[in-house]
Image (cartoon, rainbow over all chains, first blue to last red; front, side):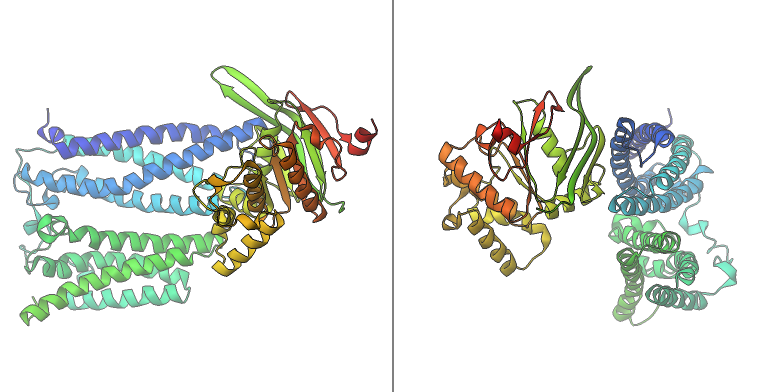
Length: 322
Length: 237
């Protein structure tokens, strides 16, 4: 048997994912049944039964989706711990690129994270209304999420099942092109323009949110998350590692860096997703999402402050930039 | 008395399932209660009075059918809204009083006001007013566990009144009281009726049979309303 599948973290992770998938499968079957017979205007016994089941399904989903957030962090932790088993890997960056499924899986998880937050936002709005106005929309969204999670669960097993512990992998020192001399930044940007864009987009995101320019906010937030990723990996990350050649999005998740990566990536993605969802809800459903937007802006501000603080602290300590 | 309809119950059924056995507790109940009316649901234990009262209060949901209060259906309200509905519209008085024995009378009475977010001054004013209405203001600082049955019931009345609800639901309110205390309770109920409250009492106590302020006595049997008896007819008979 593949040595990776016997790793404690991988067993815990795959078992948890399987249990959650089992719960989601039950919720999926019940949801399809509910959607077929749903008629909120009816006061029949059948409709009351469906409403009780719908409540059960919402409770299951809220639980599963909350655990999925935690499992995403655990997934990163698990692959990071596998770097001891995979030759050439020094952190999760090497392990994630051990086969073709890794990056696809990570991307899928980030996409799913967005839709889980969207479902939770819809569910919250739906439960605060008197007549479940979004029940059908959120049920169809759940069905779509379930299908993607089914694929994700399959890829989970394929990924961990196909990590070869004898085959050396490239890790962060070579993976991102620094040693080859190629410019790894998008659009041929240099570091200075990348940083100008980073802070400029942050200001635009804040300004658009505070002035309720929702379309501008969505566009700026999407661009911001893209630029922020490169800014962290190729600039701010080097201050976290205090090493100008260390361009890795994963090492900062390790104990040596006080697990700060979870805070960095968590605030960036959760903040951006929450902001996007609040804008979509405001545009699509015409419901005020002031609290969600405020939380998004606070998270993004924490992210920017945290990144900036690493640079500032380094400069104050050493009197030079990297 | 105001002629507006306060509560409408349409085709209400309540079933409980235990394994394969289906127990039908309420069967096709239809009822209209006008604002300011006081009605008595009479019936032996197990006739469905308490279940009907619980559904009217939004504490339980029907298996099928509709309950409208002031024109709004409450039988499907989500938890958050049903809690608001209860806090604003319903005052409940229970057979076993349901007080916290370690809290004082005043503290028990102020509990329904906690979610309202009022200032402490407003809360104290309402609590004192309510305790006075229920004729128990002399026991404000006594812990509930040290009160007699009659006093506990009056604290329960004060608690039911503190948020000034339009509807008072009483479930066997005199079952644990002696005759004197029962008569005192009925006296307070008469005052509440005079204040325009809509009152529904579920009881099998004969003391409620010929009260002047009771407009209808509705016998219940095996989960069904047998027939509605106007109180004057009952008194004549």
